[in-house]
Image 1 (tube, rainbow, N blue to C red):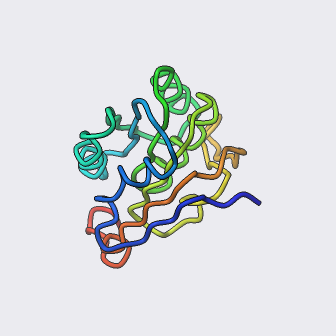
Image 2 (cartoon, one colour; image 1 turned 120 degrees about the vertical axis):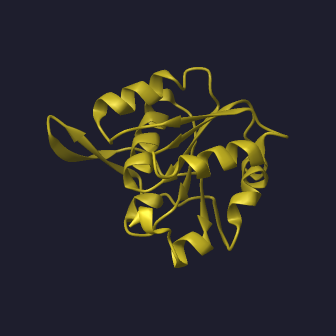
Length: 155
């Protein structure tokens, strides 16, 4: 079983994201994958890491194999993917990172599933969810205040 190399759980852990990327010795440009409700957190990470890393935030609609392909295609010139949000964003980013052959970092906004640190992705294929082997995130950045009291639109 592979485990994340770095796990950070702090009240405002999001502000340490650039430090986590440096600790993992990542360089280059990243892709930040979020959902519509977590887009503001993705953009916030983009702004926080901007001094050290270029990144683009992408909003996805659902956890489908088509969306995984879209994210993987947009990752061809990227060095890492950060999945921000709940299951669909993290699972899509995780599997897309495998297809793009780049590292994956998990930034969950809810602790309601094990996908935040597992090596599997739940992806819809042919109108049914499938559990697909992906990769364990190199790091998990847990925003403690979100996990303790998530915004109403996350529930």
